[in-house]
Image (tube, rainbow, N blue to C red; front, side, top):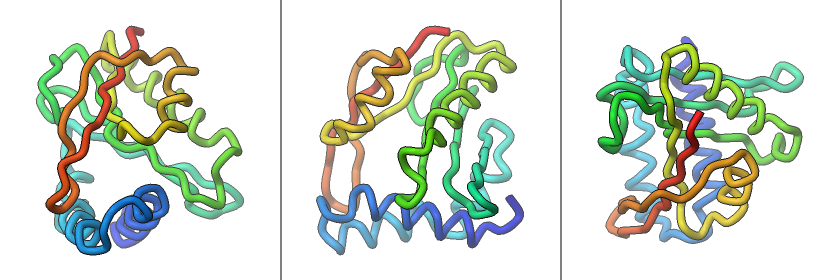
Length: 162
């Protein structure tokens, strides 16, 4: 995607829609400024061990998927794995099957890269996302700390063998 500003906008929008009500405005602002700065997103877009896939509905950017592989994964689970770091769908486009479509894309990429497992982290209180991942066959294999501003939160690590 050439327009990094559109990526920044959808990232901030979807993250805020999902987590804004359960975090302080200060922590949210600090996280968004760091995680989705133009400089950070340009770096991620140019990283050869990451890939972005965008999904459109009626010519509107509806969401995206970001995967990491090799040494670029956010946890050291091994190079035979692919990480789904982000799967974001705008609120207006949820429940249309777009998230499932992006998950299938992640499986396709994993197969193309000869990966044997896919893993992801999901906030412990995001029950809807956990249910979605379990429906696709993911199981919990651990957890890790996710820091949002000055708030340490728990993410559940889920994985699937492919």
